[in-house]
Length: 232
Image (cartoon, rainbow, N blue to C red):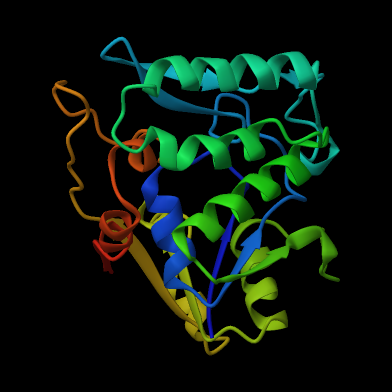
């Protein structure tokens, strides 16, 4: 059984969805500390031919809090602002009419808790892209939360009976293949191949939010992109 474990991100880039699509079960890692200036509550979109941050404001966020302990700040007002920005930025995109309804459902959801809100977004995008991977929220698992880093990942893998753990390529310095092998677990790293598509008449800007990908590409084309990676 192939497994991936990742923090919940705010409309992450396509590599996140490649990872989710490549595994049988995907653990939403919600009971670890929030990281400021990461991708948990922000991403990038195109506005006026430039990349700009799309930020979900949070209430008293802190790196001393777990992700699942944080709520959205002034949720109704800020969700409406985000939705309006996306509408304005992408109203002339070729697949705007196909995806704006699901973005409205995802963004204007009434959930206040950050993890539950992001989990709902992930489920809605998964349904659109027909990704059927089983989602598990890590705080629902009984585990030794005193463990950190690699030890905790291995424990989750063992508990869920995974024999193949896949991590984004950025984690190559965090995990040791020999340590995973001691527990009968194969460790691989997913490296996204170059993905380029037409964005209005702009020079292509890579690694933007999945929102950008969906606005400029058909579902069939996105499904092909989901397979454009190498396991190392």
